[in-house]
Image 1: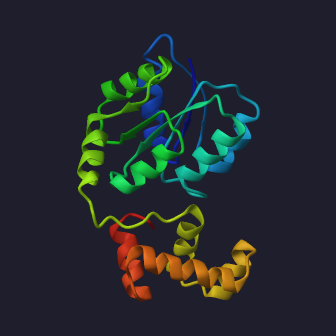
Image 2 (image 1 turned 90 degrees about the vertical axis):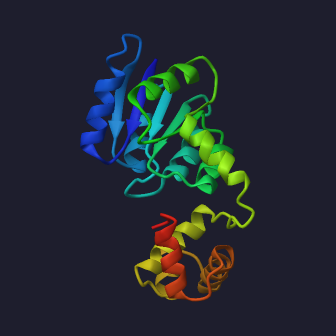
Length: 205
């Protein structure tokens, strides 16, 4: 099975390579540290499974999943993330990934996940299953932000004005204002201070 790893932490990446290549029938055929680098390398490399972090320097793992699924529908994807929020796990699972693990899951669970996916199954580690079950009781869970709304939230946190955001993303100021209102509504916040506090508390920035 040919695997590709995406993570911007070199030490973690090296550890994953060592763990996976200890298995005789698993081969790492490439690594990358960003969404763009991954997409460039996938044009040159045939793979069976992409293992990606959620936090990446240029875009988030959800954007990578969406782009890979659209261009390479046969590639299987395992998300390995430090995020353990139910709403984020559910959002990623909706994109049709083949597995989700959190980074404090064990090495044995990682190997089990790879073989489960190889066999055509979906793998969620026991910890992720617990997260989802607890999330079922979250009646007050906030509505999910879209990729564009998260993008705008990050720019708001960097003190960009509506005009700055519009120029950065090549959209109109009116569109930015609509997105800003939606972000406030979905997060249940009423001003910039409350929004930034919410974003940090929920690992959105």
